[in-house]
Image (cartoon, rainbow, N blue to C red):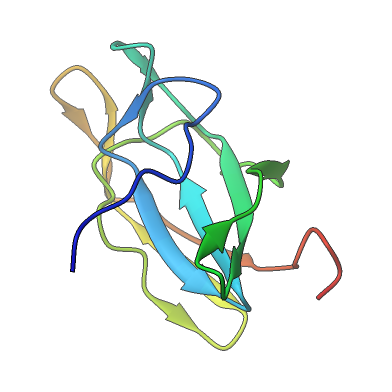
Length: 105
């Protein structure tokens, strides 16, 4: 069917990762404001109407990174593998985080 705009982020963002977990869309890393690598992790509730709640900041990544397009999840664990930490500067680091719903769901 047709696409519909549900809202906007509080800042521009590109090359981040998004994964669905526990009824939330989890958006992490990426490049904000066209040049700044980000360690932000934000979660928004997914609703049935269809809808999307406000993105809330949760525990950040251990360091800023972008181009981590896939973030596999298993149970409550989310894995961030590699990515870019600067202009043409990549990292082999693997980070794992435990997802906790910011709204307690």
